[in-house]
Amino acid sequence: MSWLSGLINIHVDVAKDPKHNKLNINQYTHNLVNLLIRTGFGKDTFYFTTQPILKELATVINNAGGKYMLEKGVSQSKLKKNAEQALIMNIARANGI
Image 1 (spheres, one colour):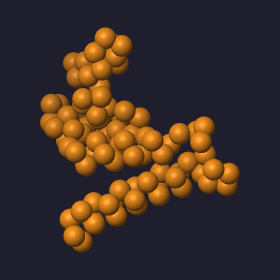
Image 2: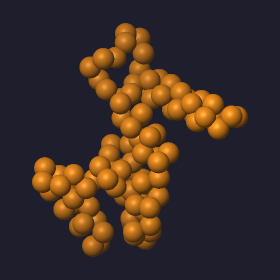
Image 3: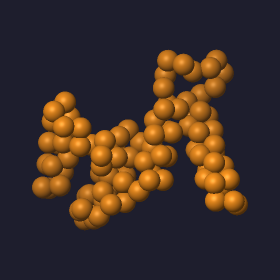
Image 4: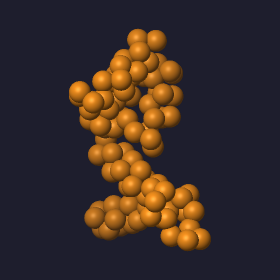
């Protein structure tokens, strides 16, 4: 319960100190963080969520999920899926796969 209380405090104090950005707690990773905390991972949760690939994936997905610049006939889920695939392709190219 102390971890959940700490997460609530982080969200309340977001204007003063944006710690949730450093810990990669956002719309995409919120449910994952909640699951890992509730199953007892504790501090290890944030070692996992701050991995560079997870940060990049969360940024890509959150940016693709905007509601204001949607193309007609393209759903948000389709945009997010395309963003995931583009990220995977960029990583594969960078690693020579």
